Structures are given as structure tokens and as C-alpha cells.
Image (tube, rainbow, N blue to C red):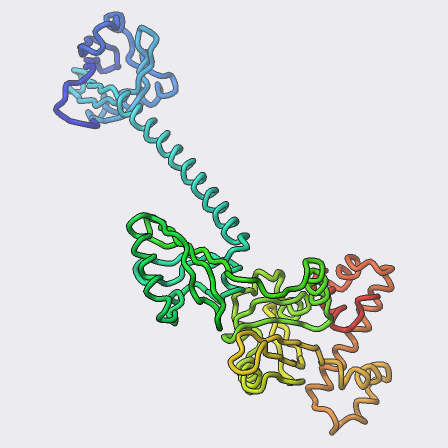
Length: 441
């Protein structure tokens, strides 16, 4: 039986070899039940009919083999109550019958039910916490104020929102502003001491950005199971620089997004701050948020013409003109591009703008079209002028253009139907139309 094996049983039944009840000894807990009526009745008639056959099988085994057993049933009491019981049976000999000792499992069932309810409540609390965490993350990222979460023990940044990444170049992992000027370090450390004592502190002025740019920093303390963290919120101080109006800024952003060439702004560590849609097409990435905060080296890594070379030239000379390299897309494509770069200032620039122009078709598109249309005769005439790799790529891309135009013509300009006919995704077809300047087809 479950529980203490020496505890007093709730009921003891003496049965003959056929399972008929001969005697009943109830505990005080069942004293109010009129159990005398069970005498002379088959034991199976007093329990849940769903397990009666099992009880009969057990009784037959005991009668034939004298084997003892232990099992659980729902016991039907004369009052109409139904209680879970665990019975242990002991054979008295093949002809003498057996004894069944029963223990009420109601307390255990109640405990299991309470445990199940507690588990359900814990699960509900977990999902409430996740919902709160999601809302916090959305608000944190959507804030126009630069904000970072910093570990108390080592001042390393754990989280940074988009405003902090774009405005101050703060990324998760490094220590928060380790090169802070000495004039600011003392007041910064005093503020942290006050935060640890009181949970928050008034804002102080710090030189966080390059040059003499002054920022207001407010701090508060967060304590979690993972440890203690500071929440730093930062806003620029002083007279704001002359900036374009909201309408002008929107116009500039719209033009940048619609540029037919890829455009990206990176910091001095080659971390992406801003890109346009054409860059996303070249990199084969679906959304801008997937590249913000990533190193552009992920897509520009051609030996001898990678982003490190381009960044070095831009930092030393202020600009780079028409440097040919290759951009590698996340889905496996590679596109030959011509990069021009401009730094935001002369000498130790903080940001660099990159213009990426697809030049795959510039030198060989005309030759390739002629080659395809004349059964390859033009290819023979270009031998020695173009490499075999360029000739093959030109022919393939010219044929690809022809098939795309044919599919669009057959589908009356319906791009979804044309993509299905070509067995391409609509996004892939859109990328190829932009690549071949066929977007107006």
C-alpha cells in the first residue's frame, strides 16, 4: 500500500474463495457507513463496474495459484459516495479464501488535484510573465530615447535598443563607454553608487558621443533572478543642431529607399546603421531590422576587395570611387558590384556611407544577348576579350532575361502567375526584375 505500511487500514474484508464477503472491519472514518449489508455479497458488486472483471480475474488467480496482489479501485459505499481505494490481498489458502486490506486514497487524490491546479496556475503566471516581457521588449526597442541594460558587476552591455545603436554605437557585449573622459568618470561612479543605495539617481551630463557632444544620462536599478542590472537612459543636451524639417527628412528617407543602387551607412567598425531596400535585395535579406547592428563583412568578404580594404581607404582618404567587389547574398547568390564610399568627416570618421551598384551586366550584357540570339556565333568572336566564366554568366543571364520576359508576356504581366510559371517565388522574381532593369515590364 501507499504511505505508511503500518498505518491502520480503512477497511478489512474477509472473503471466501469465490470472492463473497464474509466479514467487514471498517475504520472509524467509515463508521457511519452501513457496511453490514455487504456480507454475503460478491466483492465485485461493491466496486466500480469498470474494473469488476479485473477483480474477478484477480480472485480467480488467487484461488488457483494462491498469489497475493495489490491494485486500486473506486469503492462504492452504501451512502452513495465513491472513494478511491488501494487494496492489498493476502491468500489464506486455496480453500480458506483471502483477506483484502483497503486504504482510502482520497487524501492523495486531493493532493494530486491541488498539485495539478498549482501547475496550471504556475503555467498561467509563466505566460503572463512572457507577455509582460514581450511588451517591455517592444517598448524598449520602440523608444526614441537611447537606452541600454548594463550588468552591475562588470558594466558590460546586455541589451541596447535601436536608438542607442544608431546614435551612440552601443552594442551588447562590450563594456559601457570604457573610454569615458576623466572629467566625467568621477560623477558617473558617484551616480552608480547612489543608484545601488536608492535604486535610482538624478541625471548627470556626460560626454558620450565623439567631440564635445553632451548627453544626459539617467540610471535605475533592476534586480532579477539573473542578477542586478542598470538601466541607462540617454538624451542629447544643449541646443540641437540645425536639421531638416520632418517633411524634408521624410523626403530624404524616401529617396534613399527608392535608389536603384544599394545604399548603406556603417560605423567605423563596419556595423550597419541604415540600409535601403536595394541593399536588402542584394544581400537577400527580408527586413531592415535583420541587418541593423550586424557587420557588413557578412556580405562583403571578397579577398583583396573586402569591406576592410574599402573602410581603410575611406578612413585615410575620405572617399573611395568605383571599387569593384562582390556581395554575397544569404540565399547563395553573388553579385558583382561597384562600391563608392564617403566618410562623414576628414580624419577618424565615425560613419561611412556606401553606394553599391550592380555592374554584372555592364560590360557583357550586349555581347550575351547577341550570343544567344545568333546560336553562339558572337561568343566565338569574343574569345580572348572575355573570360570563359564571364561568357557563361552572360549567356545564362541573357537567357534568364528572355525567359522572364516570355513568362510575363504569356501571363499578361501578372507577376504572381509568371513566378509560378518560372517556378520562382514572387520575391525572387522581383529581385531578378530589379537586377535586369525590368521592373517596369
